[in-house]
Amino acid sequence: MPITEGTRAVPPPARLRTVLCTCGGLYGALVLQRLRACEQLEIVGIVRSSRVIDPTFGFVRGALAQIRRSGLRYALYLWCTTTLADWLCAFGALGAVPTRTTKSGPPVLTTRDINDAEGREFVTACAPDLLVSAFFNQRLRPATLELPKRACLNIHPSVLPEAKGVDPVFQGLLHGAALGVTVHFMTPELDAGRIVAQRLVEPCPGASVFESTAVCFREGTELLAAAIDRIVAGDGGQPQRGAGNYQSWPTAAENAALRARGAALLRCADFVRLLRTRLPRRPDLQAWGAAQTRRFG
Image 1: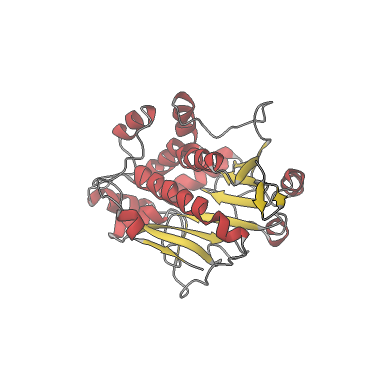
Image 2 (image 1 turned 90 degrees about the vertical axis):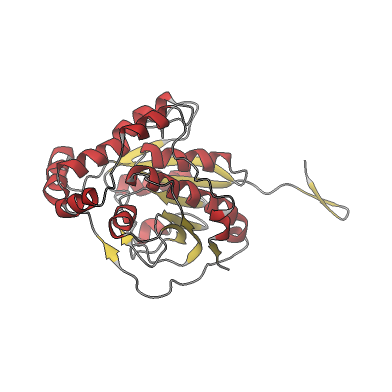
């Protein structure tokens, strides 16, 4: 139905054409499900990353490099968060992030580098208003960031500027730091753009890195959905307060230290709950997340 302004009928605003960039798995599936439910957005393309460590590495070489850096246990954890989680999501009500283009869905590109000619051509053909990055292990170069008409947004599972980079939830559980999530505009510098909204996140007691990260992405997508109208209205967010810190891939020694603290990368119960579409769990803390939300603009 058209909106009426006085005596003049105004058509409802068009939905924003949106490209999602992700590695898939549970985190990507949670983000995609919420974005699809957002009335202001239309998913017109999905970019799935096939990168392992470096865009020049194939899967085997990348996997070996990951094992050398982080140990076999963490490399298996990454496989579980992506490939295995894709399979489990496909069997559940949540649904997996598509791996190929179908007649009923948006076009899908799987690539090691969204910045190459094929990646830029794909994004250009989607003619997006927004590009949303979530659980995506590639940095966008300036030429790629300029393709969407309105903005490129990232959902990062930490309270920026702290814990930029790789797997901040792992580092937070390792060091006993507060967990959180930030929605920010993307820039060529990693995790450095102006902040739209951020929130501290309280996972359930004893939650694994896998489940805690899922909670962060779930809450981050809610923040993004709530901020769409402000972004369309021209809200440019607020600069990050300080330089913060950057964390690279966890080392094998850090994995051992995480286990020594009694924490876990993932638990068998995570997969049981995922199949029952009960992962991530919501902690029994009414309005806790809303009370911890920091909105900018």
